[in-house]
Length: 311
Image (cartoon, rainbow, N blue to C red):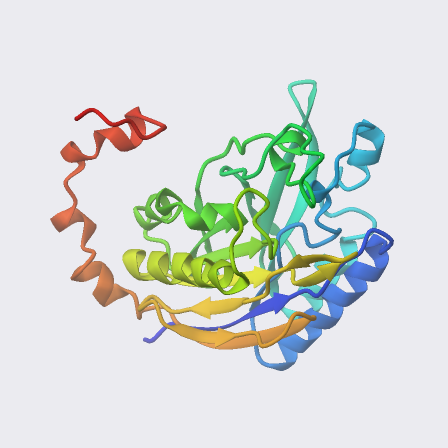
C-alpha cells in the first residue's frame, strides 16, 4: 500500500520588532487554513516564527531579551495554533525561543516542536549548531548573537513516528552540517522538518546574494539525497526593520530534486504530495548504510572538533 502525505511549507514574510505575538499568530493561523485547503496534513513553519529575528540586536538587559522567549508551549498566545490543528486535523512544526527551568536553573534554547493532527506535542528539538558570535561587534552592520542568547541543544537529533512516517527536526544552521542528517538517517528518517532565518548578508565575509541561496539549496538537496529523505524547509524572509532574510522555502525529494519552492519573500504556502517510499531505493542501493558504511575509518568525526593538518 503506497504511503502518501500531502505536506506544506509555510514561509513567513517579515516580522518587525513592533509586531506582537497575537498579530503573528493570526498570520500563522491563516497559513494553516491555506495549507489545509490545499489538502495538507502537515505544515512546517520557520525558525523563531513568533518574533523578529532578535539575535541581530545587541541587548544587555535580560528582561528585554526574555520578552522574545516562550515560557510555556502552548501558552495563551499560541494556544489558538493547537486548537486549529485539532479542528483541521493538521499537524505542524513550529520554531520559537524557549525559556525553561531544568533542575532549578533557567535555560534558553532555540527550539522547534512537532505537533500531531490532534494538537498534541509529540517531539521537541533544541538547536545544536549555533552560528554567529557572543561578543559585541559594533562595526558590523548587524549582530548574529545566537551564541549569546541560546545554549547548545541538549537532546540530540531524535526522530519520531508521526503522519505514518519517521520524522526528524533541525533548525537553520544545522542544515549545513552533514552530521545532522546522517544521525537522523541512521534512524531511518523519512521527513526532516527544517525552519530557518538566514540573513541576506554574511557579516564576516562579503558574499553575493545568489551564493547565499545556492549554499542553502545545496545543503538541503545534498543531504536529502545522501539520506534518502524528504526535507521540508521553511524560511522567514524579506526585510525585518530593514534587515534582509533570504526566502527559498522548499520541499525537497529524497532524490535531491526540488518538488516545490516559494517565489517571493512574503507569507506563502507551497505544497507537495510526499511519496514516503520514494527514498527506499536510495536507502537500499547507493546509500545502503549497513552494506557500505565503514565506521572503523570515521573515528575523527567524533574524536576531533576542528581541522588539524598533520602532514
